[in-house]
Amino acid sequence: MSVDSSSDSWTDDLYALGRRAAAVQQAGLGDRASFVRSRQLLPQGAWRGPRDAAESWVEEDDLPGIGGWDAARAAGVDLLVGGRAAGVHRAAVAGGARSLWRFPFRSGEPVDARRDRVQALRALIAAGLAPWGLLPAPEGEPEGLDTLRVVAVCRLAFPEIPHVVSDVTTLGPRLAQMALGFGADELRAPIVSERALRLGDNARNPAMTRKEAAILIRGAGLVPCERVAARGDGDGRAAASAMILEEVTP
Image (tube, rainbow, N blue to C red):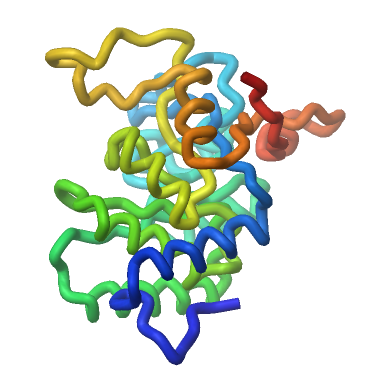
C-alpha cells in the first residue's frame, strides 16, 4: 500500500488524511499503542537510563566517540537512532539490531522539500534500508497541525516501515498523544518510576511514569502496551533485540 497517487497528502484535508493514516495503523497493529523503558549509550561509554531497561539505544552521531557501531553493539545496544548513515543502519539491522530512522521537517518549509525527502527515503528503502520505525523529527518549534500532517504522511507513505514513533521530548506530551490518532503507534519518552511536577525549570521535562504513558495512550482511544524484551534461550544479544507487547491494565 502507498500514498494514493491521485491525491497529494501534503495538501489534502488534514482530518481525512488522519482517518486514512489511523486506519492503516489499526489494520497493521490493531488498536494498540506502546511505550518502552529504555537506556541510552552516551559518547563517553556511560549509560543514561535504568539498568533493567528493555531497550538500549545509541544516537548515530555519537558512534564516533564510542568506537563505531560494532563497539556499541558489543556494549549491548539493540537500537540505532539517526537519519544520515544508511550504511550503518543496514549493518545494524543485518546484525540483529533495529533501526529508528528520523524524518526531519520544519514548520513553514516548502512542500516540495518534503516531497523530495519522501522520495529520498523511498530510494534508500529500495536500496536495502529496512527501518523498524520512523521518527518524525521537528527542527525548531513544532506547529501542531503541521506536525500531525507529517505523522500521517509518514504512516501512509511508508507502509513497509512497521512503526511510526511519536517523540514526547520534541513534541510535548499533548501533541505526542494527538499524533497517536494520526498514524503513530508508539510514544517515545524517558519512562521513570517517579518524577517531579512539571513546574518552573522542570516544566518541559519529557519524562513520564508507566502510568502516565498508559493514560496518554488510553486517552487517544488505544490500548496501552509496554514493549518488553522477549524471554528466550538464545545467545542473549539476539534475544535483547526481540520485543513483545504486554498490555498495561488500569
